[in-house]
Length: 113
Length: 114
Image 1: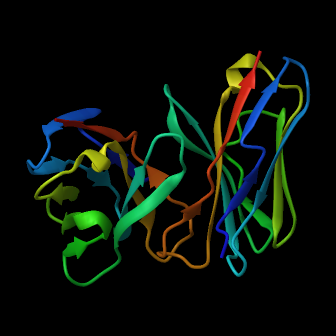
Image 2: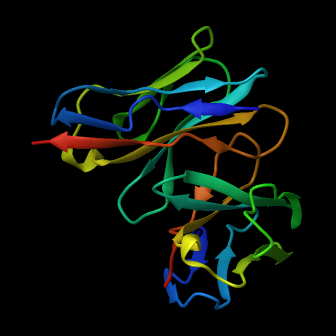
């Protein structure tokens, strides 16, 4: 299995632009998670899906952030408009079952200038 | 609500010396516990997990952790570290029989000194 695949690996964008981050979970994993990692806040859970349905989005910082999972093999995290404080590494992770732990993707390093 | 405290943000240790990374959790219900490792510019990788049973859990790369319910701790240990163990280590908790959400600690950066 190729693992959790995220794209792009790096994204540099100007303030105010729309940014879309993509994730392909491991086949057969029915839960998907989006995390943000910064030096100041560490790893923050933004949102997670179970069977393509959003279960908990309480970590989404504000309305500029949105996430979708149209099918079991694809999810997006969108920021519109982007701001410099959104600069971070965004990780996607998936799991097949409670207690198994997550498999993480390699992350997308987002820089908003 | 559940929380995880990693008491040390950084731990320096000489190569081939033993190391212990400390983790305490807070929860009013039964939990699953995890340790993850993050190498530079990579995602997190599962080192080991405690679900139930024996309180001593062995993981990859020679690491082990011990679950102590009375002290609500899950410390990570390795008897002899190698330069390749330089990384950040995250302790994490999820609630048993509730949902898949995992809460992570802030991490401990392990520095291996030559």
